[in-house]
Image (cartoon, rainbow, N blue to C red; front, side, top):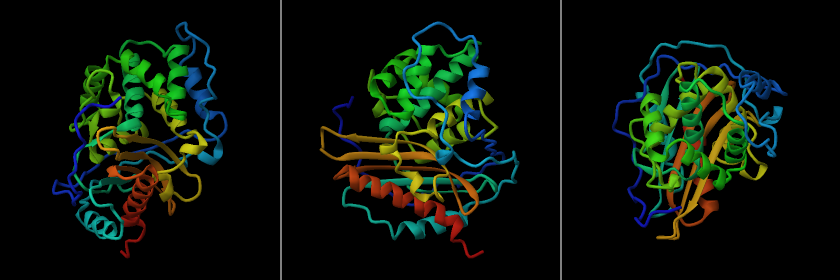
Length: 320
């Protein structure tokens, strides 16, 4: 699902845009055991007809969930110092010649954020979070529940990164038009859906992915509590072979994420991306790490993991 155009090759640089300020960011995550699945199933009872799901349960295991926290309304704070700390930390991150990387992070308790790099990237499979968020928003607007078939697709798309399921839901939401319309409400300003069936070539920025994560993990969201709980649960139960990326910056297994990887046929180089919510040093962070131009998938994974660790270090290693 690729276009014929070559990927962009701008070198990442510290963002010149004003730091992202967040006046309200709360996570209030339902975690542990069957709590996530139960909350969603109750909210989605009496769903429309469709095939019964043959996919694994959407309930995240305790080892892959994020910690519960109360709603807070932190005062908006300048992130200029955090940007400087992140830029300094990124100097130690090895980036291949011709590769590009951008990362954005938000600490949920304080509402402070930091960003590095302002380029546009192919989403690859991280767009699957956006696709499901769009489907859930459309269902809310229509005052309906997801069908059993839609839930089957959603589970496979997020937990196993199944492309056929993503294509089915991409069509269901109205492809790029549906995604772009929902993203206007979500507050994404620099994301554009891929052409035709090419959902993986949706263009986005690290800052926009951070905004999307706030819609999923925060209370100030267009998505209902049931929708957010459902999506968080799927992101907390990713297949074992896909548990890499921003989770590298977490303490233990306190994470919920979605990764994306795409070898470009036009160049032979890899797009590697990771977005999610992690816990480190007793604090929760939303992190988006995007890259392209990687010579191998493994090198791309190492790059986004190093960028995620650098992003979190702008908070955890702050001597102040």
